[in-house]
Image (cartoon, rainbow, N blue to C red; front, side, top):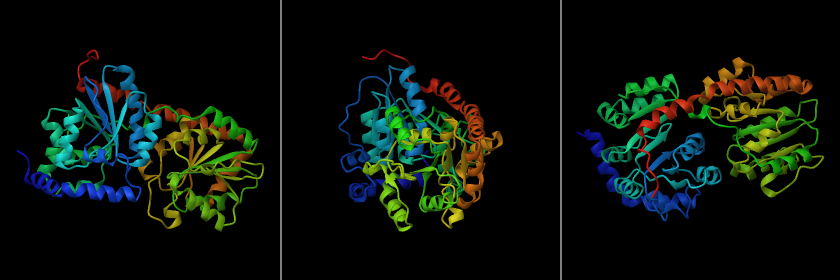
Length: 430
């Protein structure tokens, strides 16, 4: 029997469903939705469903979607008889997935969690297995898919204490939702404990963000940029956030050696804002989105483009991870970004104190000697100068990080072995 709070949620979302198109249109005007494909959020699609069985994977935003790519690639190679559907919820994630998904994989925007929308989406796509990554627990979608017999997996699950506290007021509802899953694999022991408190049965631990290959790149673009930079050491400030760019530039002004600093913001659409901040500070720079090239006098390159992080990281002699300095700058914490991305490429990495989203990985890389933690941007020269003075030591540091990244990435095989029994039985495509 469905608990009363979930019945009330279903009734409320059905009553509010007629307002959803207007809210989505308003978001589209603010750039938060794709105006050309906004109907997909309401469960409508122009894409036909191929015949045969279908597996659906969902990651809400960029990080979650990218963490699914190794699973998608494994599915395409191992089960060519299956159609693979990937959904995400943000414009940026859709843009990146359009470039990164294997040929034949279908992308759609995820439906909003309203009963009619969910039914329309499931009627069209008819998945046999649905795999949700991290923390996507939408009551209407999950319960309706479960009612239809769809196998459900929550993988690399991460749940906050605040979420647990919210569901603690409705324990029967929490048990009903977690009980709908056939497989739950939290990404760490803390999330496992929290999900168990909600009534979940835990089947092991898997963190998909620890798995995966080095980020891709364009070799021709690498050759052009490398030639333009010349023999100057390259420092990449990766996935930076508000105010970090100027703080890092100011700090690296104190270096005795001349370097080429590549600023690669987490959200490239901030490029014009960053450019204005650099101009106010009196810094000269070249901006990639404008097609400006690196010249002999270019010390700062604003790399404000999508899906090129693999290119910039390969150019680096060392990497500073952004999203980790907010507390030192008096800003709300971000939690850091994935330090395995530079580590997989053998790049020595430096991060700030706010790496809470990646604490176990950060600790493992630091213990291996492939990563250094500093307290603030102005502490960077004290770490970077010795590495610039001894690039062999920097390369050795990067290699230690690379080996640690390889050791961390075994979760994909474990996930595959647990997902395989839930997949539709193999059959030839018609």
